[in-house]
Length: 103
Image 1 (cartoon, rainbow, N blue to C red):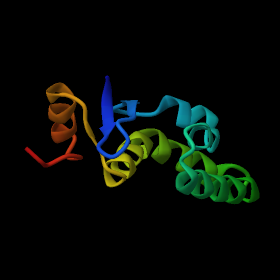
Image 2 (cartoon, one colour):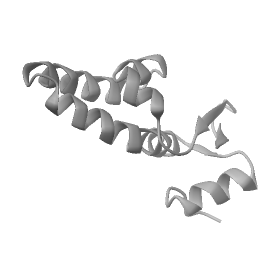
Image 3 (cartoon, rainbow, N blue to C red):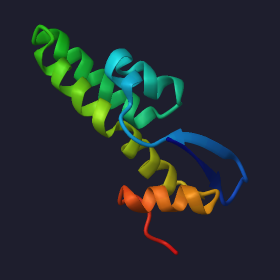
């Protein structure tokens, strides 16, 4: 499911997916790079390097965790940057996932 988040300061609207990030599973650190999510790009890249040193074992574990949690982390970061749900459907979807608590 995709929802829209609107920035209170700039009016910019971003469409984000709720749920697992299959692209993060298959493309790893490229996903935050293309989203300009620099914090998670650095984190994913560091774990990619560590994963290469452990013959992919750590990398596989991090990719699975990233697949399950990355979109939630990305949405939480956007909410901390003054993005808010653009409509009631988005607000309700975020409340169900435990990411948004305002009325």
